[in-house]
Image (cartoon, rainbow, N blue to C red; front, top):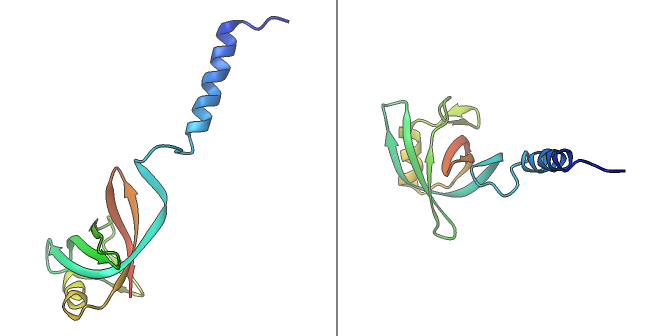
Length: 113
């Protein structure tokens, strides 16, 4: 039985495409939300109620820079406004940031204490 080379190459291409659909080896998007716990070191606001960016330092002194998601920043039953996050910064109260990573950008899903 002979299998044409073109058919064999087509089948191989389908297999390789299917294997890559899971994102294996690609670093542009992490599908599952991740978490980091640390102290807020910088809060930048677009307005009184809208966060522009958030910086957190974890227990290993790693600095994490986050952007808010499209729905704002919520968690624990209330909104995390820039002023609320500044209170955490001044008091040194740690937060847990749940986030996703897309194309190297860390986007906040939620924040908790």
